[in-house]
Image (cartoon, rainbow, N blue to C red; front, side, top):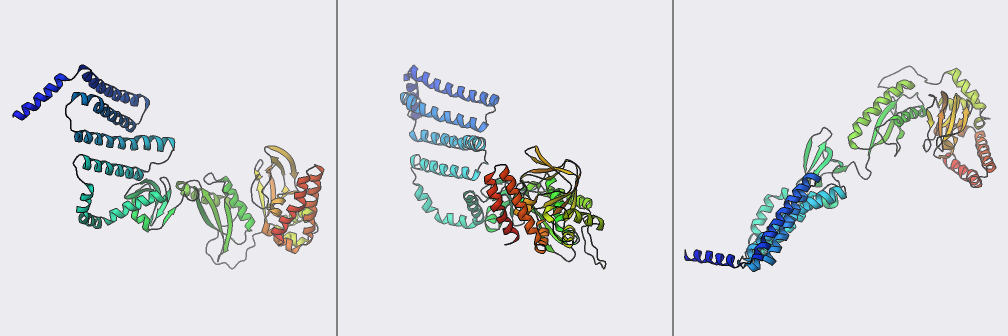
Length: 501
């Protein structure tokens, strides 16, 4: 009882001997801190500041206030506050400052708003763990006078037992750390692991959360991701490659099928135009020719919608073009799906008057027409687009077309002319747009059909060389000497590489 009375007497004596300036400074520090916290709350309410940032600032100013009081007011008050107690309080406040800084300033402001990236929670948790261990070690050594190494030595057996019992959990934790280091995927990527496929929405220490196409959440343990095969649909390119298989009757020329399919792809709004879609004739099956359509979709979520749109459009396009889609059947009749005889003869007669095909035998021209296709274009419809890499030649059978460059009309072609020959013969991208001024009807000749008649008609070599020579002279008249050199050498070399060598 006497001891307590002596303590209170000492405290009373200290308080009576504290100067007015010390009391004033002590109260001033507390009032300033309270004013700062109230001001931060008002700013957060009116300026939409993150609550985590406000919490960090409150704890930070509290830490500054503690240091100010410790080094200015408390020594003058001579209260005899133990250093261990002050250290304990400062360590607690420092811990909260660190937590709020990582969650608020680093994650909310720097990562999300400045870098516009997803927050790596595992990395933040790892930093918190390391700082927590450091603070605990400081407290043990300076407050409780305990050597941390002795605790680790005495609990080695217990640690081994716990580690063996939690090996799966520890494996997932280590796998989660490795995922953050190697970064095989990121939040927002579409991945497939074993039988699960979906969009990554969260990566934690123990598991990775994905959202499936059916809008279900699946939690995949990180050690399962490390063991199983992982497919990332967003890498190395951000868009998704897809393909569709379609069977077509043997009687339809490939050029006609490819033109119809390309028209579908050009009209589709669900697929990317660059990289451009690809159409391949893959094989001859028992009752059909198998085509593969390769295209790219900007996001994995749009894959099913794109496939549905393209398949639906193909059906309507094939109905419009009278292209039959075969099904397993046995037929005794031999069908010959060709151009009508009168139309074929009329086209052959027109080809005989065109400089590129002059001197060719009627049988070869007839074969060329039968292996090509006739396509109709509406008024104002684009037949060829600048930069396109297709390699078809067009012979204008009826109507009128205009050659346009950057919106300006350069020239017009009427029936009996041809265009697109440079893409066919040299593989050059289209250099201008060609649009139907009137409803047009064209014979579309692909490279393989042209190669076939090229081997049967040596006369066409002379026609091609003459055409290149005339083009060279035309360039020369316009003073385009560099273009003349290109026309006289490079184009012939490309032609030989494609069709002769």
